[in-house]
Image (cartoon, rainbow, N blue to C red; front, side, top):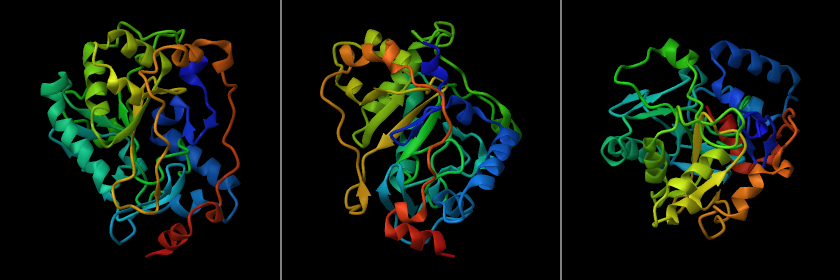
Length: 301
């Protein structure tokens, strides 16, 4: 079952490559250079991957999670009462204000609600959203965020530490279950706290983590519907918000199927059929693949 934790394939807009999320600053820079060297001139990754400032205007999630862009983004501050932003050199702490507000709100209640000391926040989105040069097929409209499965320590990490340190792997080496040496009840409580937020549409976790949650959840299991197994995600989990009210150009994903997802649906992930072969990125997105409004955002000063 090792491939469930370490595959590198792009499926339905989600990279399942744990290695990309874990890359340090040097590895990330090397990957970006390699990608830029092979991208066509009209690639959307090239247009959005180098932006350093948000697009002016009212907040707007434009398009779909894996084909879109973001107007009026705000950045999650590098340090908050109960969070720290990781991998700061990537400049991917930008998001729709609704997502940033949710992260700040949930982070502050987690110590009391879940016994979780604080969040180490990974990639959210680029300053103007859009396709990234490395690591993700989604995270394009400012409504996706990666949260490390490492509890925040009492001290503050330096920028260099945030760019270099590795997150905690909570999945056993064979991929069949969680690693009992790193998984804690606080992990379950944190995931449940996020899943109970009305604006959260989905939370992507490693199938082994979903298996543990199914086993540990009590009789009130409605929140498990939002917990969706996906390749990788053994070092972090991925939260996805629904389109905010009034965002006419935003395209939400279909609702998850009803039920807790702990039966045959989950069992499939532990069969040979679920093993995806490793592979590189697919065909790069061009600007013409994105909503027309994204061309305007990419060109804005």
